[in-house]
Image 1 (cartoon, rainbow, N blue to C red):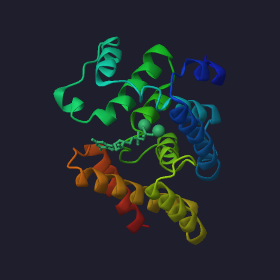
Image 2: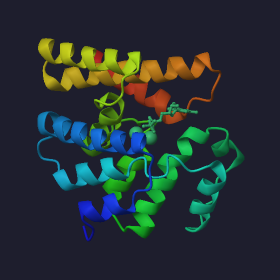
Image 3: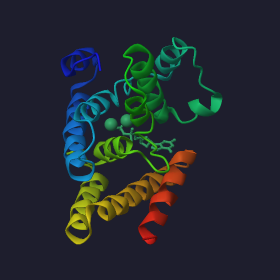
Length: 200
Ligand code: DGI
Ligand code: FE
Ligand code: FE
């Protein structure tokens, strides 16, 4: 990749809180990769984590303008789920401006919703974002604890699958409580990882 970690840190424009979360996600992703997917390219893990929320603080108008630069327009349906726009614009910038490889851009694209049969890189980023150490809300704390306890009881693959199911269940539960639209990828991912925990 023709970009360095320092280049990425210099291009991030984020509040201190979001920047801390970004570094926490990088750390968690590297740790998850070491245990679950040791063959992953550590630079890809770090770069996808550092960039995953690069547009998180954009307004809807800024997301629309950022996508337009690459000839992409959001539908009215896309805009009904504004929280998902940052994964899309961060992925577009990574792909077309930073010229990062497809697997890194896909990990960024699916970091909020997850999807069926995530690649190792997608899985590591998705879950690191949820459990990184700076997330202190009750649900993240309890998910981190469940993950640790699963690791003590099951092999790492099963522990991660069970933790992914818990994470999707919580996200879907929260979205339902607020009557928000649930992305098809989130639902499909939840069912996929739930079935996986039953089938040997
Ligand atoms: O960007 P972060 O805060 O670090 O975390 P994230 O990218 O996982 O975003 C979390 C937010 O995204 C949270 O407010 C719930 C929302 N979200 C997650 N999945 C879906 C979703 N929103 C909609 N509308 N649909 C989803 O499927
Ligand atoms: Fe995000
Ligand atoms: Fe994040």
